[in-house]
Length: 395
Image 1 (cartoon, rainbow, N blue to C red):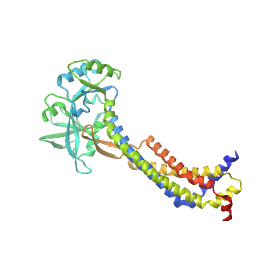
Image 2: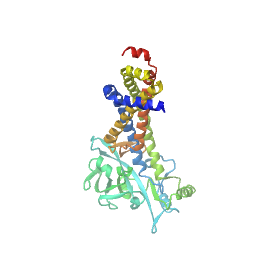
Image 3: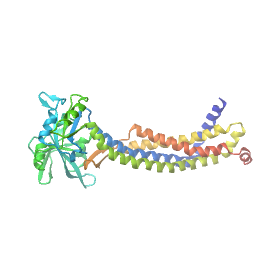
Image 4: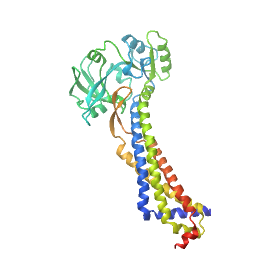
């Protein structure tokens, strides 16, 4: 118990004297705060992109494409094949009508509001059940497009990010004028980055005949997915890949997310090394300034272990303060910050928000604590080994 009392007493004394070493202490705090800020900012991009992509997927919705297709853009299905899928056992029906949407996907050029540069935006042809086979999609402005007309509804995120997509406006793609008649929300998912029109109109406008690229079907329950896959793979008229919508979008998100993490973690490590040196400098300065104080404590009977541990605790608390400041700054500055980026799998823009999540902040705090422990260890050893007689002669 005596050792614990000594540790508490010395630690409290160190903390009380921090304001006297404010300059050196702030170097450590700011260095750690910068590490956590950059860490959270970079990885919040990956988190936001993943959340936007995965939010569009459901376990009880299947997406069917041509076998071997890595995305809808390089898939192809005939009219006969989409009918086979739509009428397969296990597909949920509304009365006698299967909840299925055979779809076509093209990329159109629209300027970004922020940069006025051309960007690839997905124009998706859908069937009437498109809203029913997806989660959280609802019309929030204007009206639905009419079949057979050059009209489309726009996702909220795309409307906010790109030029000329206000409801009531007209925009030209290629040789065709299109009217924006409505806007829809989709729970912040990737669907909000798209424009939706009648699939028949899109087939005619881009001379795609009677072909499609994918078909989405709502299943009676998620257990029907494997049965549907087995049934379709056994049918010689169709050679499909069958995925849950959630699995499909998770696979789409992985390449960019992996790239961001491959950049973010090494960058954090490099900055952490700099922060460790900042903490070392701060704590060596602290030990040097308190040499007489430490020697006096040792002469009064305080052991080397409480002195060493108290120095590490001081360094860790300073780093923790930096971690909290950096995490708070990252959350206030970057959480919800909206950007768009090219999804390499579909060669089109995805609009998403940075997401500074709780687990990212926790990882940042843990990194800060590690920096604090490493930065305080060697100065703590020096403090514990400080020659008492030599320091006392300097009083």
